[in-house]
Image 1 (cartoon, rainbow over the protein chains, first blue to last red):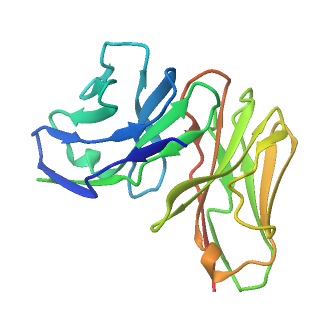
Image 2 (image 1 turned 180 degrees about the horizontal axis):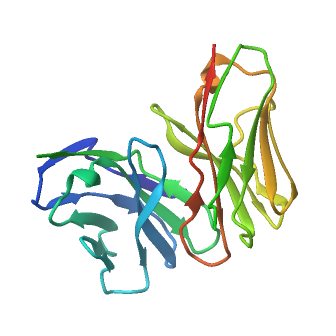
Length: 114
Length: 113
């Protein structure tokens, strides 16, 4: 079974600084997709960024980018120019090529200090 | 597009009572998922449907839990009888086919006392 591990239960960053959240996963599949979701205090789950495993180029969405290391099974999220609104729980998630189920990590709580 | 709509947003019930959670997926989405979120276990997939048909219910914790999708625009998750350990946030999510992320509803916070 696929597993997703987020080793940092909590992280903090100063406003306008950069922070990187870590994620590793375990799979025997060659075709899969990786995601980062944000969950603010409102508890709404918001898709931040998506990466296809067959693409070597790292995905970017404005201030959010990933560092995808397929051989190491690592998928970290970098947030640049952190803003107070970035404070949330961040979940890394895996979707295998053989089904559409999302498997989530336990999450990292990000605090942004003014 | 109103997104995935869940009701109620909060539910408080007494142990032993029946609880029904409701979900309306995004029109045109052919997959629907029910997740449960707790501090201890994180986000767990309970069951998912494709074109209204249950595909995988291996995450349903016990026979007390049941889910239905009578049509493409409505699904329910029922717990009967409810127990305090069922207290959690229950999310519904939907998606179109292909490897895209889900769109989640805002969740139902269930408290069983």
